Amino acid sequence: MAANPELRQQLEQAIDQNPVLLLMKGTPDAPRCGFSMRTVGILEQVGVEYGAIDVLPVLQPLRDVTAEISDWQTFPQLYVNGELVGGCDIVEEMFESGELSELLGVEQPATPPRSGDGSVGGGEDPEGPHQSPPMQIET
Amino acid sequence: MAADLNELRTMIEAALPGAKVEVVDEGGGDHLRAIVAAPQFEGRSRLEQHRLVKAAVKERFDDGTIHALSVRTSLPD
Image 1: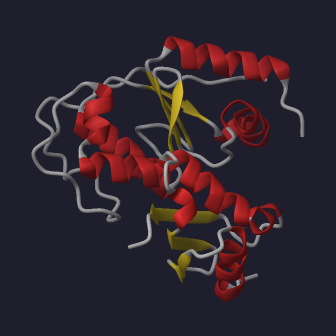
Image 2 (image 1 turned 120 degrees about the vertical axis):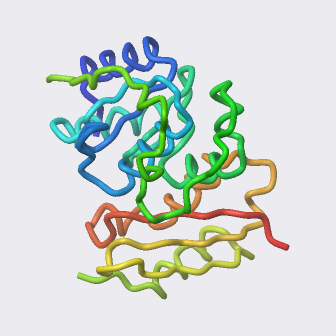
């Protein structure tokens, strides 16, 4: 289905304006899906500032948009410097290998999380989460 | 409706001839994991590798049989 041009424009703008942008189900404080939660956990562990958009209010229209602009239809989606990096699997794999920290220009945290347990590092982050307020796209 | 793991494996194998494919159920029959080693992945980014796998089973996403498919890709040994 053809994507809503207005929504597409809004998303492209958000991707432009946020060097690190996560499209997720729910918000960083209240993720509504395990995969989104895991991805948030990794971003918080890496300690990078990021924007977050809750896709749930406009799920299907946004799927149509990301299908067009990134050939990717599932969420979460992590964009870095305007490019889709991937979903939870790719982000996890790249975090474990150190590629994600390299891409984000930060140092690899000392203890990577165990894969797949959904934990966000046991609340041991001394600096606290770095995140921009969640954004909402309205149609 | 629970997904047919064998069918999914066959779909991925058909899309990526020569691939070694494993599909496992991570719970509930609609959260699945596919572990795929395919010669076609050579020279492709992770994103493209995942696109190839997801495209192979797109029909089962579209009809709602699967909701989530974790993918782990690698080159064959």
